[in-house]
Length: 312
Ligand SMILES: [Fe+2]
Image (cartoon, rainbow, N blue to C red; front, side, top):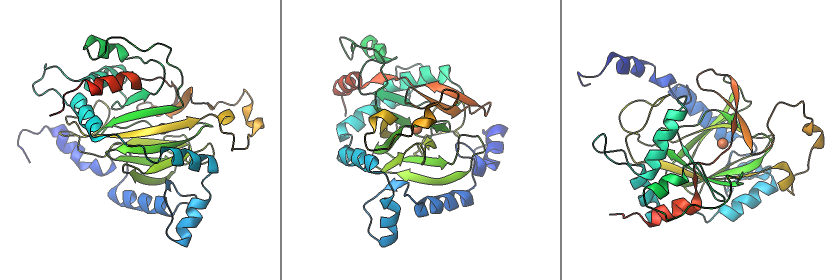
């Protein structure tokens, strides 16, 4: 242990077993992974190799299997990953210029201090921080159109950053890992003290799923090396490691294969039904809030930025 460490760091060490983002001990971590592995229906979509695994996979809704089949061959190309790493890298000397993705993280960290930021990339329309790519000379023009609720989103999770606990309401969707590694904790309801259903780790090509009745509430975390310090509110990592995931969320009226349950649509119902907004638990107040989904960057812009980036 270095002598220069502050008392706070040492104190944090003492409780690290229960620390951010999941607040569980190592023993609970192991038990939650065992729980997820036994879950019916399975939390991770796999090609079954045993009878019991087949039973776990069998109850995954057909509409979900259809989304997975269509996403199955998606990956980020090695050059795309390398260019993203460059744009996520911290400044070597403080005050140095940083890449587009790190810049967006810095803006987002200032706007929301309750948890370390991640980046949402919409596959259609325009997004809040597209203008930064124009300012940095990566693109010559910005995409037309509004920030429309794209059913398909790419999410970039810097190492050791995480989301709050949130619910995807009545949507049906998949979380498909494209790069790096992602942990997903599943909860039985939207509450700070909700029962944890299981913990899974996704590697590239692996896929989690959700529907309004199953696995709709979760928290995502990138467990890779984030450098110095301990994750928590106000944390910003100091490495270029990240996980990336591809998310598809279909509203109830878009999932032709799921029977619609109309009596759930009364207006007195508090919960948000579509992907336009989702309910979450604020990390500081531990109370329920609503997050209007918006995107930070557009895929058309990010693709041009990545293509414009020299990778050595
Ligand atoms: Fe989510």
